[in-house]
Length: 163
Image (cartoon, rainbow, N blue to C red):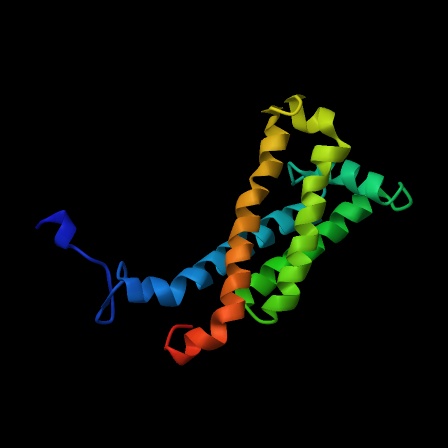
């Protein structure tokens, strides 16, 4: 059988068809972001499990003027990420959730400014592995901007049968 003729089907509809993608792409983006946030948040809730724990602790320490213990702030961050992730998976209250997400993303970019020795091998070009870990958040930001656009046009899409 010719590989190009094989398709995965959902009912009578081809998964690779434009209609299926139109109806499900934003849900897949939303749930994917949610899964990552649940996973990373859960790791931060357990001491020593997250590879980002030290970086998050240092950054949060600077942002809170060291008034709150770093380990407590990392656990609170983990809970916040878990809640964000659950919100993305559930998909309710997306406008408020997206605002919270963008505020969180601003915080995740802070180490680039506050901790340049941890994020750059030779500023501003050569990122360390930590810096690369932070820069990948640009993909999350771009994906969330798509979700913002989708949320704004959702009533119009529902009228055409796409949701």
